[in-house]
Length: 310
Image (cartoon, rainbow, N blue to C red; front, side, top):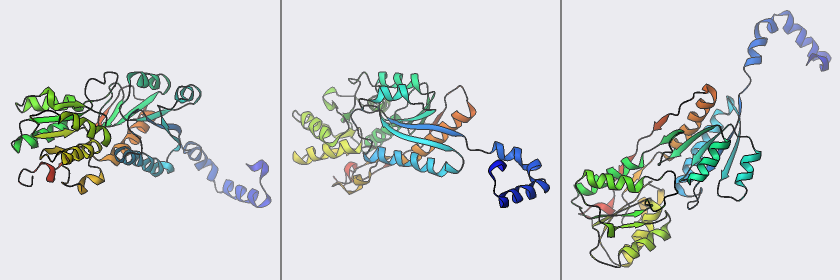
């Protein structure tokens, strides 16, 4: 500001003015200030933790992309657990331009967020209708697992994971994908081989022990994620049962189990990275329609489903 400039600063400003700098450049300088946004990562699950292997990698992708774009945007970033008691008050008294939504969410939670945050993008496996989505479709991933098991000759396939009994959940498609894939391969869904479970190892162990109380047993079990599969594997080992097993997410530990776990690898960090890009695009373009960006997955076949090895 020339009003408060020292002698040397005034000389520099006068020299710049004589050179025509301000006439040519001032308008450009005034329009190249960083756009500023208040963005939140809102973790909506009430049964999983954001520090779980899947979500921690996804969250890492979000924070890395925000840091990478810091030269272009001024972003205030917050990570919020929507299950905390103060969350409704936080929404009422804090302005957010947009948010990345992570995790399976209750209908009421999503409705509350929609009422207070103008732009939302979901990042993960289970899309949420009516907002931007960056997903790796879990229904297609489950179908790939069922196809692999069917090709191996397995016909009596079980499922342990979230089911429609959790009716207040906005976005959960694992069981739907399982049923669709079984029908597509001409295989029957046997109710005794389906057990509802949260996505923790302890829940998987308990659900598998309950399933295995009666015979016959399934020939193979598909689990809602790798954490759950770790608990199911413990139950199978406890009962000394040779049942094929598949998980989902490809967390690092899955390769080091005995037997190593067949699973579906998801580009977890890229889900978070592209979610930030899609959200910023929505904020800048002010488009009035949602978009879906679908990232690929890959089936990782390991010892737990190879008949020759088992």
